[in-house]
Image (cartoon, rainbow, N blue to C red):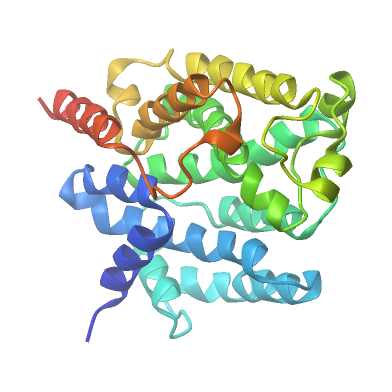
Amino acid sequence: MKNAFDYCIELVRDRDRDRYWCAMLAPAAYRNDLFALYAFNAEIAEIGISVSEPLIGQMRLRWWLDVLPGIYAGSPPQQPVAVALSQTVGRRPLAQQRIEQFLEARQRDLDPAPPPHMRALLAYADATSGALLELSLAVMDKTDPASLHAAHHLGIAWMLTGLIRSIPHQLQRGRSQLPTDLCAKHGFNRQALHDHGYQGKPPPGFIEVVADLKAEIFDNLARAGSTPEAAAYASPLLLKRLAQGYMDELTRVNNDPFQLNHQRRGPRLRDMIRITWASLIASS
C-alpha cells in the first residue's frame, strides 16, 4: 500500500509536470515536503477546473480551511494529501495563516467574471502562485528577503505564463482571465471570441493583449532574477527557466497561444536540460 508521500508524488507527476521536475531536482531532504505542498496546490487548483457549480467549489475550499487546524495539530483527516501536508508542516516553517490566505485567494477561481483590471490579476497571481513559491522556499529554509522577493515576482510571472497557455482551454469552458481594461485598451472583443471561437487567425486586438501580458512576464522574470546566486538556483525557482522556455515558444508562434503545442504535458527536453544544469550549478 502506497504511503501518503508516494500518493503526492504520483498526483503531482500527473497534474503538474513542471513542478514535478523542479521538485525531483531538489535535495533529497526536501523532496517529499515539496511534493506534499505541490499536491496540496494541485488539489486546490482542480476545484476551480472540475466543479460546475460555484457553491460546490466553495464547500470543497471550506473543507480544507476547516481541516487545516487539525493538519497543523498533527491530527489530519485520513486523506493522503492532508496526511502528508500534516507531516510537512510539523517539520517545516510553513505559517498556517499563509496557507489560509492562499485558500481564500483561490475563491477567485470560482468566479466566472474576468478580472476588471491588471491590478486585480496581478494581486491574484501574487496571492496564489507567489504564495505557493514563498511556501516552497520556506520548505527549503529560504525565508530571507531576497528569496521572498524572487517568490513574489516569479509567482506573478508563472501565473501569467499559465494564463496565456490556458487561453484555448479557458475558451472551451466559456471562461476568461484576460483583464477587462487590457482588452478595452486594444479593442479586443472577448465575448466575440467566446461566441464564435477561434477562426484560424487571431481576432483584432488579441495578439496585442497577449503581448502586454508577455511583457509583464518578462518584467517580473527580470525582477525575480535580481537575487543572489544562492537564492536564484533554489529548486522552486527553477520555474524561471521553464517560464522562459514557454515564452520562447510563444515568440515562435507570433504570440498566438492557439498555435502552441497543447498536446505536450510538461517541459520540453531542452528546458529540462536547462533546469538540470542550473540545479547542478547550485549543488557544486
